[in-house]
Length: 320
Image 1 (cartoon, rainbow, N blue to C red):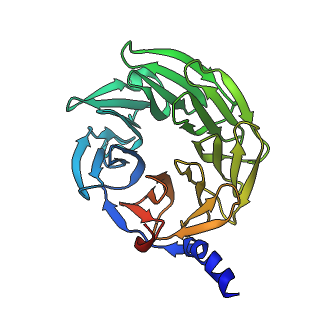
Image 2 (cartoon, rainbow, N blue to C red; image 1 turned 90 degrees about the vertical axis):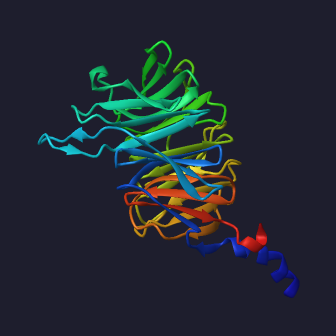
């Protein structure tokens, strides 16, 4: 018996409850975040983007944009709900305050310029770099758009499932994207052409809030209380059940771990993607999760509808 206990004890240590190792305070609430060059770039609902240096453990830059007018004509803080970084460029999307349309901004060379505005009549929910000159947009009506930043023109505009858009995720090489929507069906597209490569369906039967993609594994967080896991090559999948809506998900860089929000306490639960065994429960969030992000295999970030961004270490210090 003792020998068996020694064999299973290291795995038992992983299946534990963890509190955050770091809390980052932001203005209003954190809507989205991206990790690049040892920095965490955070989109807030307070008219600003916060750049946090993870090595120095401090905020090193704030990028501000103007407030917008609400329906009464009063100025209010602008919600920035999508963020990305490539090289020295930071791309973000905000509410324009006009007719449900979005503004898209590009920060480079210490200057912030508006790339798209309400005049362009695009309800952009998410934008990510494909390369330094092109960005993939997800529109409210579940359209995929490739926008040329240099030529200032749309290269393609592709209608996907005829349902409200929720989220998309890119492959590591940015050649493919998985789009999730209100129908529960996931569209896999070629990002250069917009061609639909595959449809993943049969697991989520309701709105997919968030999707993730890593090493041909797709994760989907569903309103139907299912955390879906698909094999992108075969199109087959399974799910991890929950007793509450699953608002967010993320996959580790290796694709070996998946994170889902699994209860009304806003806990993040980490699972092994192959065995579906629970590895850890991350506690501390006070509000609904907007984004989960793996910094690496051992660190996870959560942004939510409050003024704290939290970071967890999955391994105890003595195991690192």
